[in-house]
Picture 1 (tube, rainbow, N blue to C red):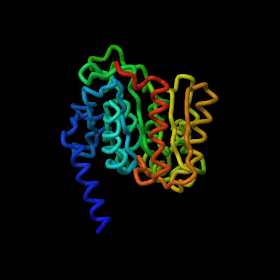
Picture 2: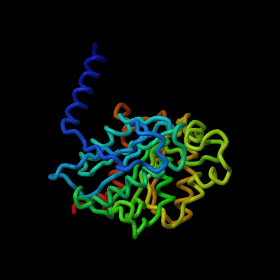
Picture 3: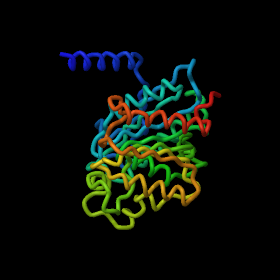
Picture 4: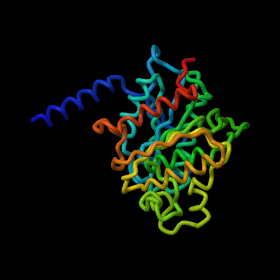
Length: 292
């Protein structure tokens, strides 16, 4: 009975948080590059949660839910994250990117990069600072966020498409229990298979093992992981953090001893849930949450 009441409270709370529906935006109105159809799975899109004007900091974060590149954990790695960011005065942009096995690389990267460009191109309308746009990803979404962070470009300056003209480089990255390496024994096999297929080219595997792609221009990065994670071993976070340090990229990593994979904000764990507070401290230390 107590459990039923608790679950009812959570559902009512979630409903109240979503009293105002987010804005839904199709990323490629004329069809995504390489689209294989016109069903929902073929049409990548954004859900935009604007921060309330009274709280608005001018910061925005593009959110990439996890799901092994075969699904999207939209609740605890999407909707809940958007609501949490809104409470900080941050506009959240959830990316519903294309998935395997139907879509392999580069489709997810194209979609997430386009999400960063879209957010920057619409900075005035969203009332955000185009130089304070971050990207956040969980699990396989963390791999996608780290891919955008290491495979960005300055945009096509002569394009007639205003969005395509924008840089896809995030101003910061937040990686939560991320898949990072696709070439190591500690990779997540399902994510690798959904992203690259059964027998991927070795050069492609290396180029998307993002610990090998970090440079001094990689954006400042916050990493959260747990030692007990059995699905995505913590070494993924460790090797990426090491690469960040070696390249002089401002970064911070928090590894908790206990905690399963896929915890999201970890509301029910009195210790693990503190990771989001550490993230707020880090964002403040870089003045990303500083009001305009």
